[in-house]
Length: 382
Image (cartoon, rainbow, N blue to C red; front, side, top):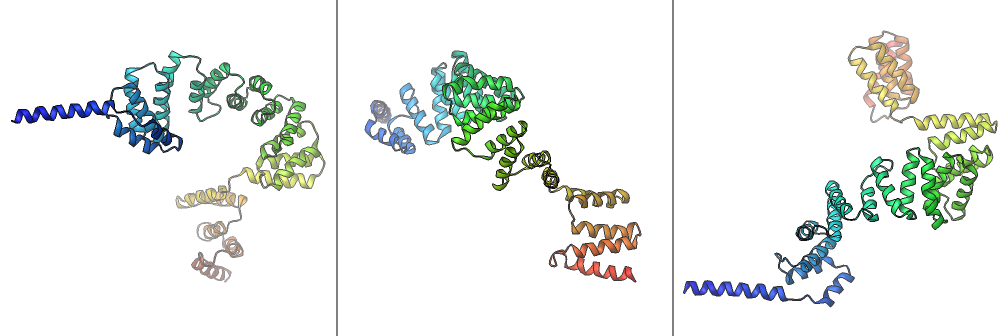
């Protein structure tokens, strides 16, 4: 009796598995899921149709793709790995495995799959494009190597031409960058991305007339970004057209996008136009912009360390250096204490205590310190 029940169970399971393997998904239902991008529902539906242990390549491919689109990357990867074992040279499977690995943060594994594709198809443009995209530094030799490979296969692709020209520009290889851009611009002469890449390269190569023409094209196309204005300002500066150059840098300033570089070039324009007061003012601004706002605090903190280690002269120098960058009330207080108790300079201490009070310290934050300083001033003046 037990043997009969056992045989019936086996037969039942076999029939169920057979029935499941012969079930065909409702293609209209599946298509609707795909068209509406309901991939999670599509994956769940397929899992009711196909066995999770299926070895049918078509079924595995469908399960792998649907789960990948649904974001279930581990499950998608497991199906693609089964397909990879059965079809190790399948480019679509290798691409999918590389893409999944990249999305899961494992770029080393992704690169290994792309290298497998190169062994089969050494002229695959998309492989080199993807390999380049995984190297973040635009001037990294590895990235430039892959970009060159992609560019040699398709020299008119604007994205690759832009990235390669930009990387070469950053690597100071502007002659090569200029050559890279020519085929892409011949194919699409009004491509804003390519024109923006060309602008600083022409300036670096002293092709200034070409730079100005390129910049005017960008402005005519409606691109008045800080990037374009800045490069136009530099191009006009290089051609000694100082008033035109100044106009661009002043527009940048009006947009609130000025920085150390644009302030410096503004100062140079004023200097060449013999407007020395404005030149001096903008040189000061560029210096201030170049210096970290925390330098004053760094010198103050260094002074406190020197003071704690009884390096009194060094402490005094560090506090004084701090004041060169910012008239900080806390530093005046530290100098007051240092001069009164470490250097025994009573008059100087009184002066710094008064400067501390003149800096209008926060009465809430420094309430006790203010009271103490006032008492010290009275005591020292006696």
